[in-house]
Image (cartoon, rainbow, N blue to C red; front, side, top):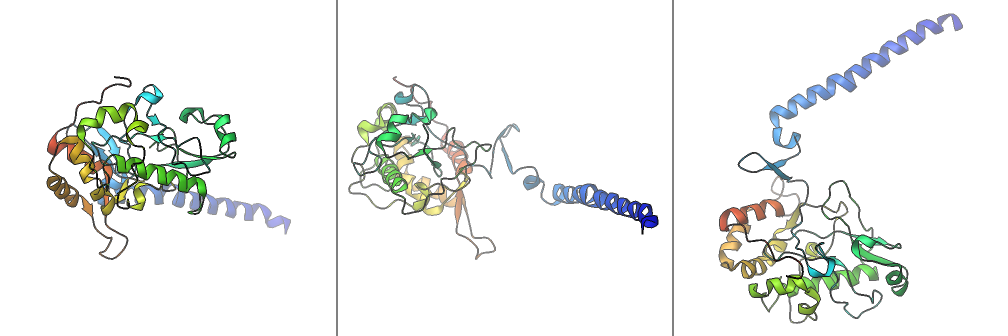
Amino acid sequence: MLRNAPRELWVALRITLVLAALCGLVYPLVMTGIAQVAFPGQANGSLIRTSSGTVIGSSLVGECFYQPNAQRSGYLLTTPLATGTAPQRSGEVFFAVDPRYFQGRPSYLQTTSAVPAVGLTAQDLHRDGGAAVVPLAPPCESNSSQGSNLAPSNPYLIQRIDTYAAYLHCLGVDSTVPFRGSRLAAVARDPSRYCGGAASATTPIPVDLVTGDFTSFDPDISQAAALAQVDMVASARGLDPARLTRLVDAHVTGRSLGVLGEPYVDVLQLNLALNRTFGAPAPLPPPGG
């Protein structure tokens, strides 16, 4: 038995080297070559480039279209309106959206620790029962992927969704009271002053606009979520809603193989087309301006 050990070890070593070369070198190189020839865009990250070739994003990673505001001194956070329903009595913290652009899905996580980046203190946690649901900060960072893992019945998640829905209604998303573009600078400076009680006299908001996905940077929203924002974007930019609706419809991706999934819209691609078609808006006034 022992006399055959060196031979058996040599056979095992050769098999290991051959398999390592085939599986670790030859197969990846062949697959990479096929992918570069057959699917070069997808194989290189589905990158989105400008006409000059500058990479500005990926169709696989969601981008954020938020705005600076006075409440966080140039940072993208705001703390508007507590809805008055327990448990989160200190109000909600989330990023202030720029109503001149279509918005993607928000990102949340639950925490039992203070989060200075979003203004959540130990006192806030104590007052709210030791836990809170806060936005993932910084947002839309592909190297910071987290999900909240919260059940639909979780009271903290319900509070956050209700509050964020009221905020979107204030900006004209599926609201019977359209957002006025003349209010843009005022709302950017202090959303809590202009968006209180905005949830009344409104229609339901598509669920993907107020709930986060597990990765925290979903690039797509449903067709209904995009169409729900048409009036908001049209009012903020002074555009004809009918033209914006046609733009959204032109950027809807249908079901895979005609039957799988639901129609969706890539938010970054839609906003790039928005700027190409109607021009990029001027920068918002700085915080406190």
